[in-house]
Image 1 (cartoon, rainbow, N blue to C red):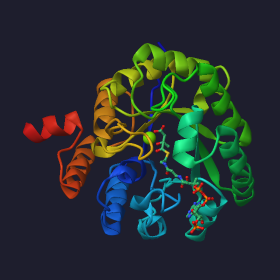
Image 2 (image 1 turned 30 degrees about the horizontal axis):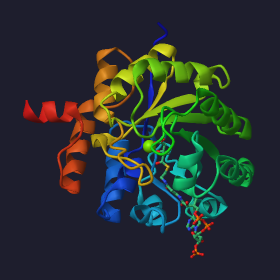
Image 3 (image 1 turned 90 degrees about the horizontal axis):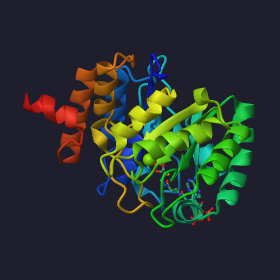
Image 4 (image 1 turned 135 degrees about the vertical axis):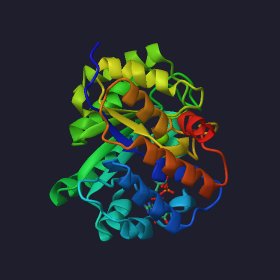
Length: 299
Ligand code: HMG
Ligand code: MG
C-alpha cells in the first residue's frame, strides 16, 4: 500500500455543486459559501465557471462572484473556462488559476460543450498559450472516465489519451472525473493505474460523483494507488446539467472524516466544514447529502 501522508482537497461545491441547482442561487450566498470554505482550511476552492450563461445560467454571475470573494492568503480560487472568451472574462476580474475540461467520451463531449474531443482540445491550445504568457496555472479535467451517459463504456485507452494530451499541453494537474458515478473500486484503480503510466501520479487528481454510492470506496482504492488530490463538494451537492442522472459529488465532509480516521492530513477543520455544509443545505432548502453531517447533526 502506498497511502499518502497528506491529501489536498479541491472543493468544487461552489462550481460543480451550484451549476446543477434548479433554482438560481443569490450571488451573495455563493460569495458567503466560498468565504466560509476558506475559513475551514481548504486551500483550493473552485469558485465558479466562465462558461456560456446560455448553457449554464446558474453561474451567469461568475464575474460578480469572483470579484466579491475574500481572497484569503494561501488559497487558490480556480475557475472553469471553456474557451478564449471565458478566459478573457475571467482575466478581466483578476483570475489567476483556471481549469479547462474535456471528455473521454465523444458523445458526452458533443452534448456538454458542443464540440468533438479534438475540437475541444484545439480550443484549449490558445487558452493555454495565453495562460502560459500570463503566468496563469491551468488544471485539466477529463470527464466520463468510468462511463458515459450516452455512450456507456469508455475505453481506458481513450481516458489515457485525453489525460496525456491535456498534460502535454501544459495542464499542471489532471482531474479524472467519474461524471455519472458509475465506477467501482477495481475499475477506478485500473483506470488510475493506466493514466499514471502516462502522466505522473503527482499530477493526478480524482473526481467522483456519488450517484451509485461508490465514491468513498473508489477514493480509497485510488489513495492506495498513491493519488493525493481529491475533488469533493461540501454537502455533496453537484452534478452536470449535461449528464442526466448524475447526482452529487462525494461530500467533502465525508472525505475529510475518512482521511482524518486514516491519519491522513488535510489541514481542514471538520467541525467547521460540517457547519458550512449544514448552512448551505439550509440555504438550498434541502437535507445535506453528507452522511457525516447528518450523523453529527443527529448526535
Ligand atoms: P456554443 O453554443 O457551441 O458556442 O457553446 P459558440 O462559440 O457558438 O457561442 C454561442 C454563444 O455563446 C455566443 O453568444 C457566444 O458569445 C457565447 P451569442 O452570439 O449567441 O449571443 N459564449 C460565451 N459567453 C460567455 N462566456 C463564454 C462563452 N463562450 C461562448 N465562455 C460552449 C460552446 C463551450 C461555450 C458551451 O457549450 C458551454 O459553455 N458549455 C459549458 C457546459 C458546462 O459548463 N458543463 C458543465 C461543466 S463540465 C462538468 O461539470 C464535468 C466536471 O465536473 C468533471 C466531471 O464531473 O467529470 C468538470
Ligand atoms: Mg463533476
